[in-house]
Image 1 (tube, rainbow, N blue to C red):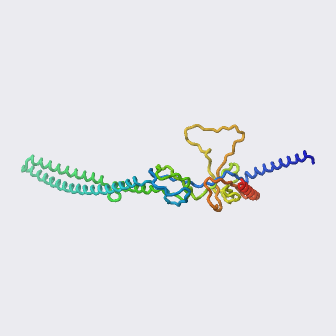
Image 2: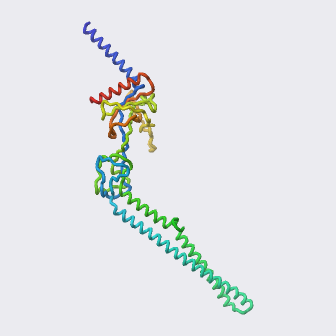
Length: 353
């Protein structure tokens, strides 16, 4: 066989291999898609204080494992202790004010009773005087004085009644329903809550990471001061949308972590994201921003899925750790062995590279 014939044979073999791989790629992309664009995501809680104050003490170290409810750092409690003491004094003042108002109310009711007795007496005198006036046994001037005395007594009764109503409004309801007491109790509870918030605690178990907080730093309420990485993970994988047309919830998945090259973990598709950021329009009052491109073939859109492992990993990977995900949608007989072969190949490549 001449060199030209051997070269032509190798060209034919290369073309045949290329066509075979091209067909394999088209089939594999539909029935056993794989992506290296996968990550381990662990929920990260940004711990922020409820109060603005200087940090008195940081009670954890960087990379320390903490449990739910553990104290992470403490704020200077001095101003909040003063606020708590003032709230307690205000509650005592509210109790004293209520006691004073009850005493004044009792006095006002006694005054009303005295005024009513006086008014009744003046009313009787005026009636007797009216009879005597008809008999010409009483002068008109004396009768007018009795009428004036009766009106004065009636005015005293009305004044006493108004004083009682005013005191009843100021006192309000009795017992725990008293408005002044409820306001003082509310202020006291807020001061006690502020005191409790001077100790910032972990909302969930996790690991403290990238700790920069130090004693003496001034922290603002609502501003994150510490990061806590949770002890659970979610595997996310980004696929071209056309590669997911045969994929459904519960389909088998094989995961290869960069941190464990050569090992394949079994799992299943647990969720599909409902969209991507490019599919979200903001009501900002602007006209449509239409992207332009001079490419004939645009980039394929990637969609995100979530994968849950069937068994726990030996140790939790770091949040953001890279992985590759091989999907095995449906029950195609040839898909499973070839998908397993692809996953093994990827795991070997990660072991080398």
